[in-house]
Length: 508
Image (cartoon, rainbow, N blue to C red; front, top):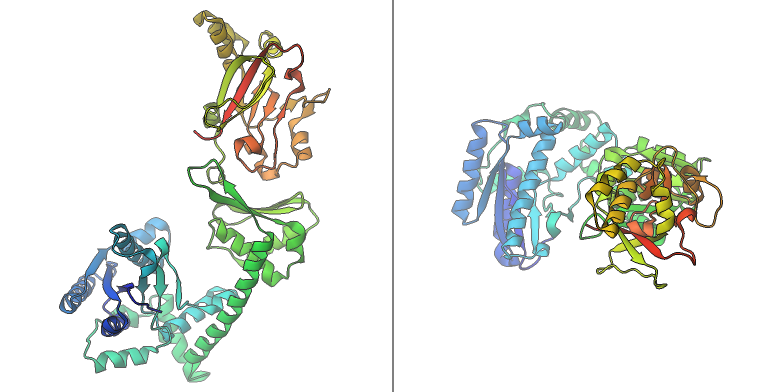
């Protein structure tokens, strides 16, 4: 659990568990050749006593020559602000303190992330209490695996629990035998929290009336469940490797981030529910949702995967969702920003217009390779623009009075008339190669644009006429509109002399 040259950050509350662990680690540090520092968190739950705990820990570390950082948080205020319990707020700030300390060590280049481990003092009884609490609140079989001996932490660190197999009674005996005199939190003896009620009331009742060794039995159940979980995790990883298609965000920032995951509908249909449910959870975890998924959510996913509707969706917590369409099951976050989509306001800044001579050699002439274009016949476009019945014609007349340079005047007129936006009701297009109008909705269905993404496809329009649908190959989005379409009305032909280049700037 601890290797040579590692640095251990111990969460030191001053209570028996953490003081026992602190003393044990101190005694082992020379032999195992690791370094140690302590973090104490004052939650301000017990005015007066909390400050005494902090002073005790700081003095203990001073006497033993160990660096100690104390953090003070008003957990009741944090709980109210975040809408969570005070217990949850306490856990949140503790791990924040641990990770802040670890990050400082990493930033100072004192240790590599892989060398830092955070040691917390959960014990055998804590494990039993956790299992009972999860069963009471509702859990799946994975939840029965309980608290892990170690797990990945933030910034590449690792959380370890060296006392997880040690009973609370043995810890208290150790403290007495070594004259450690830890602090006692008297609220632990008050049935004011769920965990306290389980510790003080439920477990003693179970020991008295059902099984004197109930704590050991619950821990045995945890170990069995963990073995099962490890096996299922292997199966899920295999399923993800074989079938998951990861969609990266190519427009949301300098680094690509996973914005969605898709599977073959057939593949998920054929999975056993025990595997499928875990795959669903893993898919959401991969794109950022790692908490709050209940059995009701999994049942809603089952319903659309096993159902006969070839286009359906289900909502998951925090704006995440799953959708079935065109033989695919897509896991995504509804937030357009996360998906890399942009607003209509920002789209305006992404359209660049130029007028060039037709020299018979069309190519992407952008300097940095980030601009893509549609080539339209200028004369055909002007016939539309200079039609008094065209929307915004009056705006063009205003522009005419301001610009004397003819080419600039044309560019400005086109800029006024063309809109880059997402779809609106009544939009239509005559796609290249067709003679008649086609509704945009019908085009999206034919192109297999995902239903939940149809409001995110960028396009260039004059009024309700669409002249260029910008495909995913240009926008970088993942809407299902794989390639763009231009209008038959403005296509280039042998008579084209001047070309309007509509360029889409993928990244600002």
